Amino acid sequence: MRKIFVFIIGGFIMFSAFGVGENVPTSKSYIDSVLVDKQDTIERTTGNNQALTNTGTAGEYGTKDIYDSTSSYAEQTDALIDAQTMNAAVQNAINAEFVCISWVDDDPSKDCLLMEIRGKTERRSPNLFDIKKISNTDMIRNNGDGTLAITRTATNSAASTYKSLSELAPALVVGHTYTFNIVSTDTLKLITIRTSTNPSVFVSWGAGTSKSMTQDLLDGIVYFYSYDPETAIISNIQIEEGTTATPYQPYGNVYIPAGE
Image (cartoon, rainbow, N blue to C red):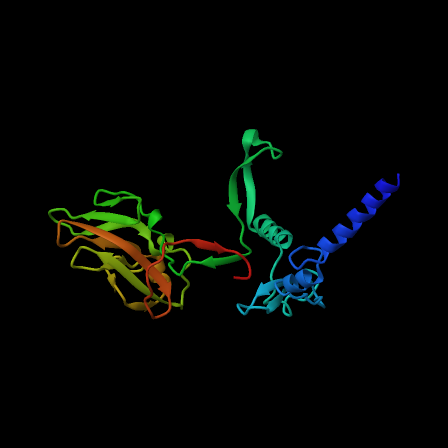
């Protein structure tokens, strides 16, 4: 029994001697040496929740505020936004601007088939001339793509639309000034308006020129021309308010999200 006890005590002595070696994890010198490689303690951030950022300098770090939806936006314009807030904002935007108007089996509880854009801001195109209202005649073919084909006859180069200016451009107002523009393969880049008070009088309105609108002009019938060549292709017809011609835009309304 005494021998066994001596053997155990000897084992503890040997283990302790091994522990003071320079290259084992239990030695103080080893621990001191590896602490040098550890990252510095990061100080606790204050104020809003923040994210750590890389400054590009060894041993230095930066912070960036995370957006707080309960605080003022003006004070957080440079803050990061978390995924939850971003998802909510995107969903709110979708709900505000896109409204489902058709569902599978006409059941609103099912998947949406067609969305309608309902922007709160309506911006009207500056172009007040609706080319879609021009119908086909013996001399006019509406191609349905924003162009007209005007074909002259042996005795006539003026093609009547059989529609008044007010029908083709219903937003024109008496007393306002408007500028007309047109693109045509014909040498005559204009329209004429057969006045209502004197049907024998035709008023020409050439590309890039302006007119003060009158009721007589609004009630007059609009004509297009194909003088040379035999068939002229006309496009980009535009009547806009003011005295300056701007680049062509299609007729109609453009809906844009609120707060653009």
